[in-house]
Image 1 (spheres, rainbow, N blue to C red):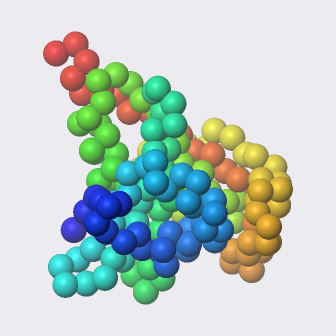
Image 2 (cartoon, rainbow, N blue to C red; image 1 turned 90 degrees about the vertical axis):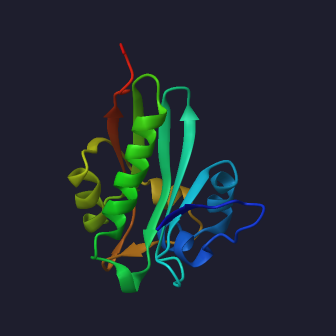
Length: 160
């Protein structure tokens, strides 16, 4: 159900990517240097996408995560997060930090991220006002501040 996109042969699910980040130029700025996974049941179109990027020697960032509106609330987002965290846990040879960023009005996303162990570490005031050409609205409110959450992963193979 989770499939790594091969950029040479697979099309990116732009409809999903732009659900999480409405400016295509911003998505393109990180997409091609990242690992993109889609949640796609057999004989179905992709219902979810998650984009992972190694941003520092000891830090990965989940750059984008989205579930189609018709499939939200069915555990797909949590499945994708757990898939990526487990994959990283098996891959890493030392402790790493995983970062995910969202908007302050993204209550369902914040609850999801916290349910898998992410903790709020920082709030960046007016991030979405200063970095996006058009105002973004969620739940009837203009999105202004960015919330940064982090989770530490400890390598399973340390001291083995």
